Image 1 (cartoon, rainbow, N blue to C red):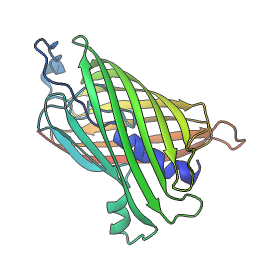
Image 2 (tube, one colour):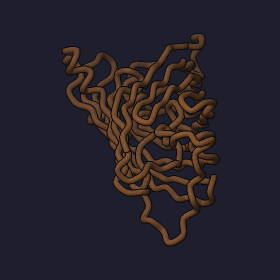
Image 3 (cartoon, rainbow, N blue to C red):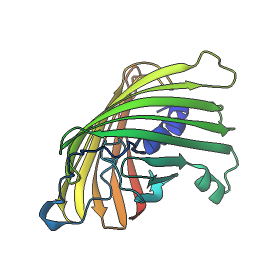
Length: 255
């Protein structure tokens, strides 16, 4: 995948699992209870890289490293409102890498519980990436997305559709890409499960058209989670073969 794509796209993924908002309605479908007496899944707001429409509770959140180099954090401001931010700047500063000057993405998401198992969400996010990396240049971006999730915190599938508009300071026209993603998670034990995603971007935007898939295992406790898996991606108009890379995420959760 192109450097331009890799730098910004992974940040979009980290932020997409962001936030959820809605005023507490008079009648809200009850949340499905955790299966088999297990503790509530603290990672229910995402699969591996794609988001879900399952909200966090007020005061609940997490912070940690997603895909190793992305520092991401999310906190629930109410039962339906949470805020997420993501950046690679902490890692670049820690290792003394001076080519990245500033980057930050932030997002909000409105979650509407339709039934006990069906949730609908809409969100917006935006960010900036300033750097001296060869062939990349400064990048600004905004996005809107919709998510439909079916299931509970222990087993769910989510469909996300996200248009992303990016532009550079010297490029007044900008580029738009559309990113549909399908993700899911199944909890096989109190402390572990499997997750995965598939995505297809059919139009040229911040990168050429591409497709990718992820698959991996998740270890989780009430205060932590670890994802270990693989990401396979391919530029659809290129003759290059499939690229497969390992990935890992380490997050601390609180209630």
